[in-house]
Length: 102
Image (cartoon, rainbow, N blue to C red; front, side):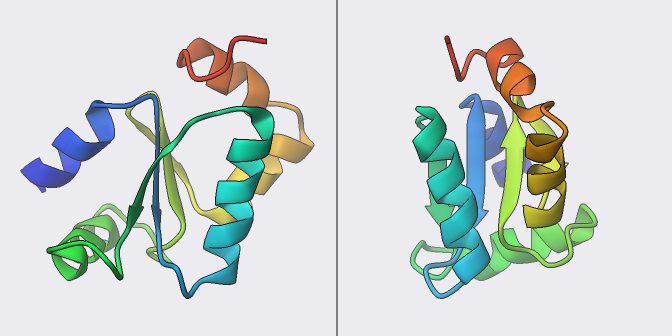
């Protein structure tokens, strides 16, 4: 859990993802298209990916990918991110976190 906390606190936008997950791809593309440079951890490729996935589950993340943190705060998965985007709350959140300038 300490490792997870360190990972999410070091960057303004952190995405936990898996290469095999189509929703992960969608969320990563959304942020990149905004001009955000998220830190992306592919849990199916990194050491201790299973442990990190278990820690995300302990935080209440279900499913465990994709999971997005903005400004060190848990935003949630694809449904939460898309809801924020559709109600025009995502861009202001990214600006407050310093991840987006325009």
